[in-house]
Amino acid sequence: MTRIFQRIFSVVATLALAALLVPTSFAQETRGMIFGRVADQTGAVVPAAQVSVVSNDTNVTTRLATNSSGYYEAPLLLAGNYTVSVEAKGFKSVTHTGIVLAIGARQQVDMTLEVGTADQTVSVTASTTMIETDPLSNGYVIDSRSLHDLPVLNDNSTLLAKLAPGIQSNGGADGYTNPAFGYIGTSFSTGGNVGGNDFTIDGMPNNGNIRRVSAQPPVDAVGEFKVTTDNFDLSTGHTSGASFAVSTKSGTNDFHGSLSE
Image 1: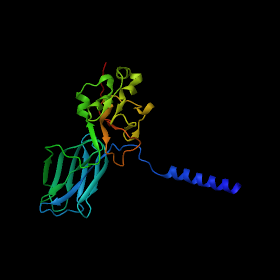
Image 2: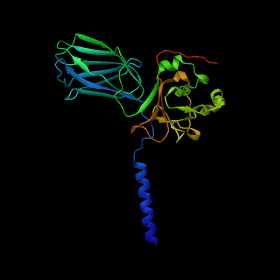
Image 3: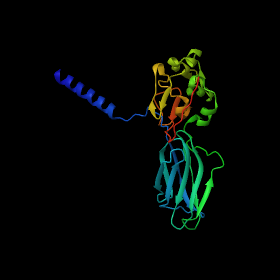
Image 4: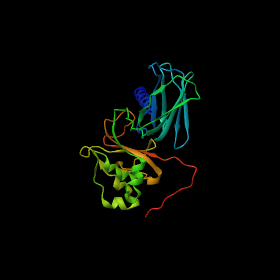
């Protein structure tokens, strides 16, 4: 009998340790990616080209090189405005500006090089909205311009989630006006109120009581956020309802603030 209990304890301990070691994906990644292929005017790929992905908002530069198939990939980028520059021996340098990366988006930016010298620069400006190439999830992004221009009651940016298709709300008016009960204003549901929701902030869990939001950052601190209602990919879990991913702003070199009543 003692040996049986020892075996049971050993099996339980092993399963518990395995559960701790298995990686989980309870949070939605708010960082995005810029990727693409570098080729010449004939369509031949250009390996070992030097690529610089620069954030116009923070001046942070990601430097990398294309592989043997001319492919480059800059992952884990914050949402914002970007410039991509490419240099390669025997070609003119190319600078692509006006790239807007949404929260958690995957933007493809292919570059075409012309024969010349590196001191010659070809500038390309994005004139149209670039298409997100990730078809897995159906999400609605509330960008920084919407957060700045649209009226937001009680400095609660999460209320703008009502603009997302398929989102229903049954939150009471008291939850909109009382800062102490801000979570009431985040009583959202999809598909007939089946299951709970998942809230994240910069990729970290932000779930409060009864599966509503825990911390409500002020509007000025929010860069943008994304509401995903269905077709979740592997970066999203912990919910059968909707996913609310918030990306906060980074700091600047200037003092600034705002006042609301």
